[in-house]
Length: 534
Ligand SMILES: Cc1cc2nc3c(=O)[nH]c(=O)nc-3n(C[C@H](O)[C@H](O)[C@H](O)COP(=O)(O)OP(=O)(O)OC[C@H]3O[C@@H](n4cnc5c(N)ncnc54)[C@H](O)[C@@H]3O)c2cc1C
Image 1 (tube, helix red, strand yellow):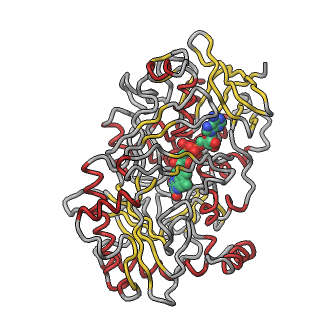
Image 2 (cartoon, protein in one colour):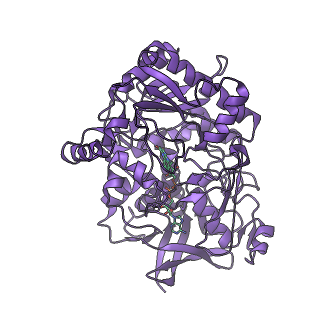
Image 3 (cartoon, rainbow, N blue to C red):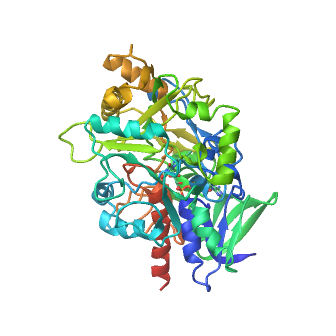
């Protein structure tokens, strides 16, 4: 049987960091298994390509779906996740956010000592190669390139001015000393080219003889010997294969993949495993619990005719010119990530830190996000989400078939706090849209529309329009307590030789987008492993 020192399952944000760092030691043999394929595709490298890879039919997307969500009027929500080298960092919206320092200090309070801001800050610097205008304190030598927006739309300045007029201070750096403010996002890109974790970590490591990267390899379970993980079972080349791990197996399959693989391997809630005929190795009720995600509520306005927005530039003929502009000059609409402008604000004066984030987009489209059809007129979207939602869901097995998607019940908008803060965020969006810089060029609010005036109508709209913020986390919670799935060195409780390192270990969602934090978790896992080996 083939055998290596370390097997890393999943080549996503965290997995690429783990595999690249462990293979820096030429004496260690590392196998990186990825269910998806290689990543050489324009829709991955070109920032605006993320609109295409989100499509449920994209071959780079697992295209999960939630169960019907009671808090969203019984709708199931599509949940894209990257299935490709780079994982979700290859299909995400490219927005680079580290979160608030209090987020990590809260992790310590929640029972994860050693994961406070003091410990995390050096890692955020380590992963980053900031090529843009961000102030001092950023990494300049790391593997993940971070750039300024290349070609902001003319509308962006009007949006920033309007937010300032509404009382939000302008910021040049959401990852600086203070997150609060309105300004341009930075993106994980080398100029106008996406820098996924595969791009940043695996490409430079590609010449290493001790790093094996196997794509189209779907892990179906972990092999154990007397309570120790000794290898991995996976489907590759049309057959079931097993590779041994002399030192450790590290699961980096993401907040959906990692708990599923644990459960398929007998680590999970005993009752649930028995129901599916899976022998119980460790009764771990925490596996799959604590599922959290941001819920985004898109609000849209129609601009006066002739005003600049991406609606006309992304129409059927013009989009060809935009793609050409990207290919030839690396300029234009295709260089824009999920949003060019961001806002972090406090919905109430007495709060000490932002409780709402906005993605501000220079376009508008049909609410049915599956179709992603742009309006035939110019428009813009303000898309707020609660920074730290308190709703919790769970992931459970739909079947013991490793190829069947698990069940995802997110329980979006199920707490009073989430509902109240969402309503406050909609009111803030309207305040920004009514400020002179936007009011002067706006024709009308289209979604929800000016007739939705009462609190109940706003809640009804949030339930009708709310959708995933693409940040599921928490399903293999890290902590010092016995109820956590992994300890604070990310080792799985109840077995030896097995860790989880990805977004699933976050005890709580951070205030912002989750890619950078997931990469940092991968970096820290590699350090724990290397320290143990020494
Ligand atoms: C559409 C979208 C937009 C987003 N926008 C942003 C953004 O703008 N900014 C930001 O910071 N964050 C964003 N995110 C979130 C961010 O990308 C994720 O939080 C982060 O990538 C998670 O990293 P991870 O390592 O936990 O998982 P992933 O990066 O998802 O990696 C998991 C990997 O494991 C593989 N895998 C899963 N199961 C198996 C198996 N059984 N066998 C083998 N391999 C397996 C997957 O194919 C995948 O490659 C977005 C995410 C999505 C999907």
